Amino acid sequence: MSTEQTVIGKSVEGRFGPYGGRYVPETLVYPHEELAAAYEKARNDAAFQHEFDQLLRDYAGRPTRLYFARRLTEKLGGARVYLKREDLLHTGAHKINNCLGQILLAKRLGKKRIIAETGAGQHGVATATVAALFGFECVVYMGAEDVERQSLNVARMRLLGAEVCSVSGGTRTLKDAINEAMRDWVTNCADTYYLLGSVLGAHPYPTMVRDFHACIGREARRQFMEAENGGLPLALFACVGGGSNAIGLFHEFLNDKEVALIGAEAGGRGTGLGEHAARFRGGSQGVLQGTFSYILQDEHGQICPTHSVSAGLDYPSIGPEHAFLHDLGRAEYVAVSDQEALEACQLLARTEGIISALESSHAVAEACRRVPGMPRDRAVIVNLSGRGDKDMGILQRELQL
Ligand SMILES: *Cc1c(COP(=O)(O)O)cnc(C)c1O
Image (cartoon, protein in one colour):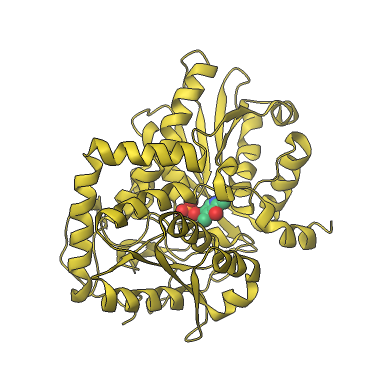
């Protein structure tokens, strides 16, 4: 079975305009329905929410701070810049929010074996972390090429007790790992939970993963209003890989029409297909990994290779809700190049003493571009989705440190 081939299932709930849905082979319809029903019950269950909130607070470290970046603001000379510090969470990024929500759901479903797929290994590490916390078995699929490139994350997962399964078929990267994880799920769905890492995949994943990250925007909105005498930000900035940290921040502000929502995609090293991962610049509608969205594909519908200096943004599809927000004009998506992200990372480090992940640096870069043109009596929020420790090797090479 290849997840790249569109196996048209029934059109079901979980649509964002025309996007989203559930395009999965027959054998995976039941596990998705079972999950959707369990999630529907959990989201209306005060005990589930309470347990989730407690884990977010005591284990992950929520609420994260909304920090006023004074020196960066002075340097840019425009609107004031606030940083939402998801980089301060346990494991160093927002991914833990979603993993905690889903592991709780797995427990409710009575599934004690967790599988996941990972590219650079960040989602694998977050998944291995929560599996260890709950004492569940964990298998992480990873392309053989990525296993070699990301040996530190492989070691982290193994230290946490996870089994890392190296996939040597195909291009030996993420999409092959996804196919392998799907094969596992089809075979073992009775006792196995598939823990997906972003607002991707078939319904209910995009909705569920968004809800698990919505705490980012709820906190930010409250914190901002406290800091700014009840006002609202002029704009929100977030990087967009699959789109989970961005939608987590945006969601609570969707009805505040005066707040601009700006997503930064990976502009990579050029505008040609294969040189970037900007789905709204060169992408077209299609199905990948169970959901209808914008994808980077060639004229035959084959998935294009992508490139980004930041592994977390290096993905050919984007969450279906972003596709809808894009078409509606409610959110705006821009491509930020590798070089711009690297420079923004350095600027933030030197003005604020914060080393941001290269993914998050894309959001910082777009904010730096726009903030000087915004009034000084207004303010914006930039989502710092993660910290840069994991990127030190790349930063060292690219910035000649
Ligand atoms: C994985 C990752 C991302 C990209 O994922 P989204 O689902 O788009 O949020 C962004 N930032 C960091 C730090 C990540 O680890």
